[in-house]
Image (tube, rainbow, N blue to C red; front, side, top):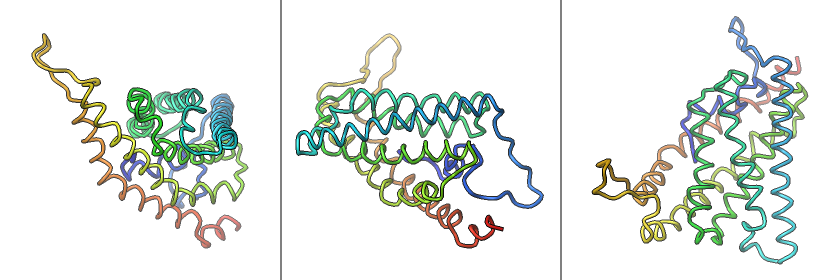
Length: 253
């Protein structure tokens, strides 16, 4: 799910301060995490990179075994749930201050994927065979392998240009691909949610409160309309800024 453009620059390096940009002269330099926190973050990002690599290998092996891209979700369901849920620790990292990013914005971005993983794909089993699920899973997998690799090498102060380039380039295709898969999956879930009344609360009840999960999902889908273009074009701006020849020349000097 998309986030506001104000969060894009923060999430670009997740507060590690290693996105290839130099601090303006006279500006206050952001202090990085301590040695112990850095060691922990390196281990966390290495584990998450490995986890998403496991998911990638699982997808490829399943495709080679079946000769079809249909229903590949079932081959990676458990590791997907585990490692996507593991991203919740990123919220804790911000809350503890070892990663100086906004807790609210990080929580919004992480929870949006956790929501799609558990409240949609897991809860509405009828959509698990939809090709749209593979669409966003494939986009997430490539994105996360690159993202966590980027963080790992940035923390080690040894960021290969290829990973930096991939981080700020492949989103051009992966982001629309992931968003399309997410929207199509939510849309596919709507009839089943309406029929079953999943997570809905009807009146009358002792709390005098009602909640329609079907309507909520429609509102979630509508939220993509203003947020996706805003973040996408901000990311394009970030790409031009980080990968510009002038910026590379400045770093070389």
